[in-house]
Length: 280
Length: 280
Image 1 (cartoon, each protein chain N blue to C red):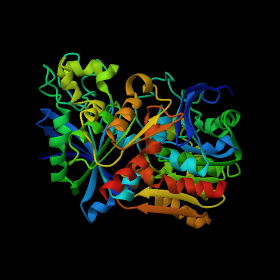
Image 2: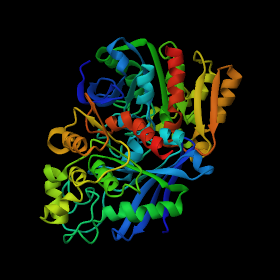
Image 3: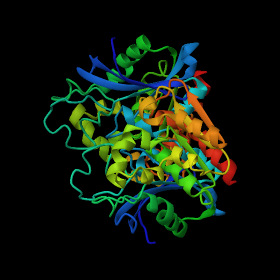
């Protein structure tokens, strides 16, 4: 449970920090970022996990999303994990932007040589919350999760599989059906093998069609000028699955916005208010 | 006056763009960033120049300061130039973080081999405003300037030397007396020679002591945990000069804040409101 402080800096009256620890789930050193709002001086605060997309690190959201201002106001602790284990030494593991390091897809791999270290699902769901609870003044009964693109996929699948643990969920431009789009069709067989039943456990649309639900409304923002919209993201598949299942979904489509953090920063305040409204 | 669009992306209802052009002042290609708020669709807007510090590029403020949200609300165009000419090919010009490329100090060099291309003062004051006016819907009669560290030095000296042109000025953790601190004592003789009278034309404290003034109040924010506070920044020199000269100054000292953009993003809204209050 011990962590090393890489840096801590004052921001909006709170503390933006970067921390390192040795992970049992991913069998190596992991880095994560935490923003503590000023309110932690007085009470344990709700905690909101942000899962980032392909190629990202804990710095991406932390630097580019502009979320600290709102988290300071609302009294939310923000946790930004990495997107995969690092320095795995697996041959070719950094060659592609959409598979391997920086592209862990928030699953537990079952296939060699990835199964030993690519266990981001267990890291995010089981290991990191314990690390955070042991080292920061968070009220773990009030935990939410959100993310972007591959991280939106991570947030949605994790919330659907653990609805008691994550009381609020939202996503920016999520991959909602990896089993049906090129990013998933490339990564899932490598990490999980050819059995599509295994893929379905990490597929938002499949999970909803199987009967998984979250309490409350899923908030999703999607830019209509997103370069990955038609081929990789396909929010209409989520819309159809939620409609048929009776899962409340607020899907907002924004003309002119792309897949970038310029889009995320524009709407991040709405997401934090969505989570704070549930988490209190 | 022609510019090339590198990228344009929707952000807070406006457009965040990056542009490239060939500069006559610096005799090479320069890149700059512009944020256009939604209000430009209806009217020419006030324009606010941000000068960045040592090592920075047009991306630094644009990505890290979180200023677009407030600029969108207030109807301000934000312009973030580079901090020096690039790819100058001068021997050793990228070896140090505090001299040469990325460290132009917003002056016109007089010494070989720097004089040919290191003319950031002329670039910022004379050339870039023409480029901006020709390509963006700005009301140049309503121009303000601010900056950070070396860029705070740039903003203050440029405003003091051109008070009719820049109607509002502010700075984060500025270098206020380069003639008296190590960063300036290293860079100024290389760019300007050994004559300290030449240095004084690019020294905020010297300019104020010589009788230069700006209309209205200079807003300065300074973190008290800034690692450069005592040796390089010395805001008390500005405080003393302004007090003796009767130049209005609002110097705010913030316990716990350092020299980073975590500090800047915390107070950037106050700066934009300061400028908008003057520029209308």
